[in-house]
Length: 140
Image 1: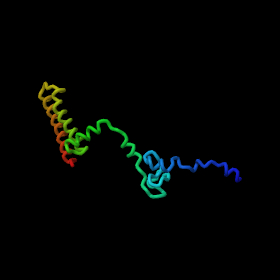
Image 2: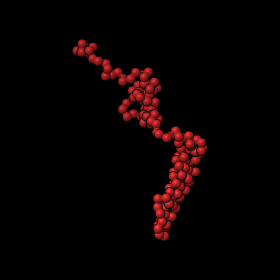
Image 3: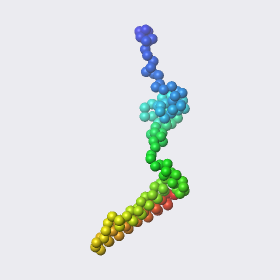
Image 4: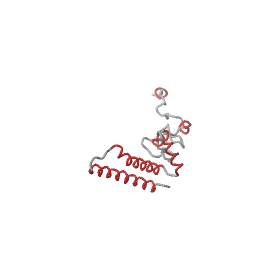
């Protein structure tokens, strides 16, 4: 029986990454960035030192690049607005353009058509006012 214990492979108990690799790349490992021990499945804290587990979804989202996000952020910095305020401002500008373009796409032949087009313009302009008010409320 002792010979069988000598031949046993110890790879099952070895952690998948060494402690130095776990500390160097905490996003890519399932090990604690403070002590290097492996996290228990679906645990929020390290069972050895109590450090909270880094959120892997947030670190992956930080490396994802959203097209146009840098331009949106620079526009917000130039205007002195936060990102939600810039989005509301752009939505308001889009609604104003929609109100102006109603007359391009629709023509009036009767009074009823003219009233319908005016109603659509009013709706577009109300949406623009709501977006601009939301932008003002979301300012710094």
